Length: 206
Image (cartoon, rainbow, N blue to C red):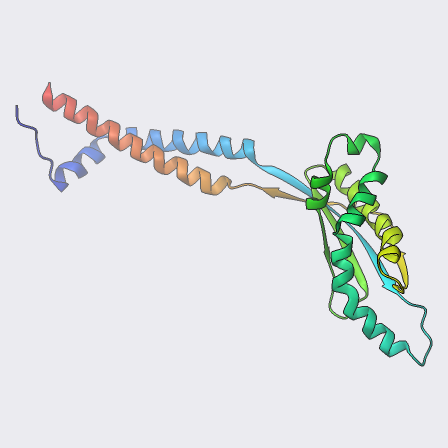
């Protein structure tokens, strides 16, 4: 028995004849991948607390000292994210927070930023748990206040701003729902077309 060769018009007719089946598979595929993406989406919470590092200035050397302090800000940021401050932070965490995390997670969660020409450093902690983020950032700020003067002589005074709280913690959803829904829909269309061609071919052979 010779295999039937399908022309482009034949393929188009097969698709239109089975368009309902293809649409059903597309909807099912898109729906399944949508639910999967919804299930896998994560929410992260970011808590912030600021510190300021400065000296008590007199009029004669105010400008030069401020310039020197500003130049050191990137170094202070690196020190805050460094091992000594991280280990001090870890030791000061409440036991209920510490037992559900690790020092590596603490280190990976902490980041800093600074506006140009500002002596204020904002410390940020981002985790999947709001209470954890608040604990991380508050204890990091206090550890910085304690450890930075030990690490850098003549650093000046480290002023710590008010504590981060759950109320001022921001959240962000991380998901690819749209992308995965489109992928599922495309796979459903392909599956529907393949099944349509298989059914048509089977009928032709029969």
